[in-house]
Image (cartoon, rainbow, N blue to C red; front, side, top):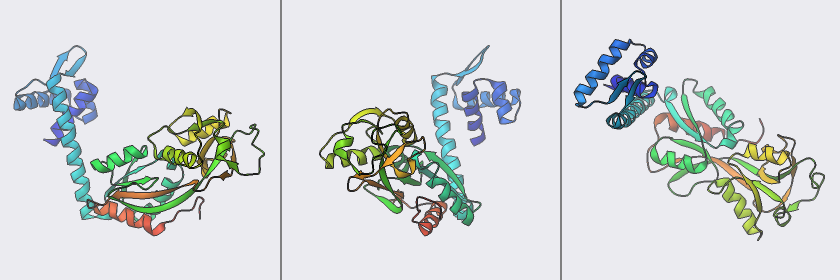
Length: 295
């Protein structure tokens, strides 16, 4: 039955029997017979046929939604069973922040791969609020996030990243050697992450503690892009220190207590981790903390 549902999903995606059959590695007559058999079993016509191909009708769309859910649950069950039978070859579902994609994540995966070369890791790159949603829904088991989330979440601190003020090379502060107070930064065009992101909350809290509000000129949900905008002379920004200089920006020290973020590994504590995810967490905890540069 699962393979029949996969065939329906292929039809729903490709909207053409011949193309779907080729993807599934079967023939057009076989797939047509399978569709008729499923429609007969369910007692409903699911796809409309015309010269352009096949198209799901409202009953078909409902059936495809259910088929997608059943197939996803089946595949997850198989992964979980594989993890129970052999944690070192099971599958781990890991989410992480965009800003860790080229630094912390590759180092962690390299360390885990050395200890469990057959372990499979499914990666999800997304903002922190989406990671927590996916952890709650079971779509992810582990997440690399900042700051530590409140509530029923475990935590392993992995890296402390100091924040720096970045300016363009031709900015009047580019040669400045003294620390810059946030009261001065607030008078500049400011580039930052949109509200709702954990990093934006950290930045807002720093300015609030200094009793000032930044003059936000641009908002974009990617720290690398922020660094590029500053390098092009479109404002100043606060970023983790590893982003300084990527596009020629100049980093300046901040006169702001607490100007740092702690990155860590988190998971739900009100449910049991699968064996593979538990092994992954243990491996990472053994290697922590991770410095900003290679050891």
